[in-house]
Length: 473
Image (cartoon, rainbow, N blue to C red; front, side, top):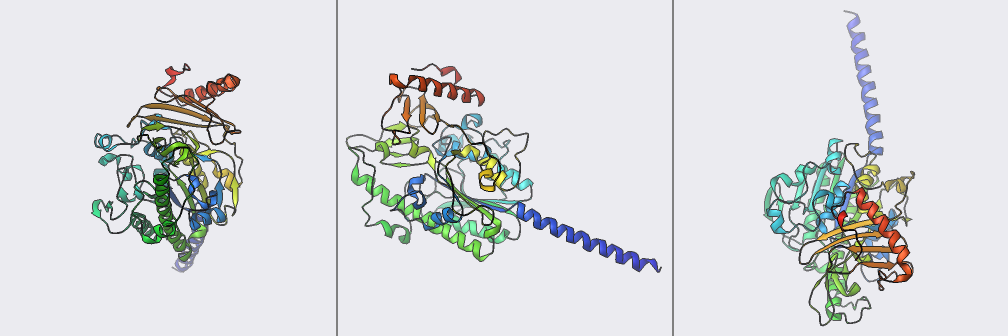
């Protein structure tokens, strides 16, 4: 009987020691595995942001991310339209590997097209590793019940399953039911995001915020977002024959939509400070692809429409820089050194490996991804940069094009395996504006052939279904 108190004390001591060990481990885990906020805008090229050189757009909070974190100077997408780009971000695989090669139309969505639930998305992996996961905003990877975000690793979803929702008073899924919400969509999406964070801030969380902005139609936006640009006479691309008034009006409205994102980003950063979460939270900001407003005489992205006087809005498939180049900003106070700039080329096909790497995880061995882990650049690891960026786009809405691209620091080769548009070769070093197509220039045929060989090697690697169409036209 006398031994029982001793044993009881020993058991209590062991319990206390185990609790101390558990607490220490949890603290170490928190330091190694931060919260994540992944912000994806829609149709936002890097030229729209002050931190990337724009002196007319007002983006103080995006600029703050660049100032307090890292800015990638050469970030690209692997497909310059929505659905295949978003699929690549979540899986690390190209659209042809996933069966999603153009944006998913409403008709295709009703027929069941979408991301295969068997794929291993990084939100699904994070949930398996103890994260509470959420998505606020746009999905656009399938609308059938088996293609719902919950099937891909999300505990929480407030947003739109399809490709679009209204800029004001949107109808969104909330708690599994469609509801018409009051307010401008950027504010509504951020309200949902902040609610998720407040509910889950005591535990590890990973939140994706997918704004609809600055996708067209750009307006309406809140007065505070449109007012700064109402009297602006914006600089526009110096393209002869451009629909000047239309392009300037588009640009003013576009800046207003970008401002709506930025203002809500400010709300987010303020709350992270208020809740003492900033140092525990990695924030990634990027877009699903670039955008053109007058660039090359066009409007929109990889399925751009002509914007020249005397022309209709004919679709012009393209891989111009403005369509494939995106912002990429990463902030994690205390771990990512403030004010860093990286010139190494990266692709959104790298997102899968890089998000997991940033959070302290390795990709699973059973899932083959095509990207590289750029988090090593941020955290001081050994990184082997891309020697070339590759992209693809099988357009089948409004026009037909099977585009494949290789981009090196000096050259860009674009092959179109359907003859709606010409094959293209640009000397980026001497013609960064891509104004002179040198594909048929006899002086650069050796370069063209070398690029084609590298492009073919990549296509074999990813089992491109267009391999039989290699013969140059």
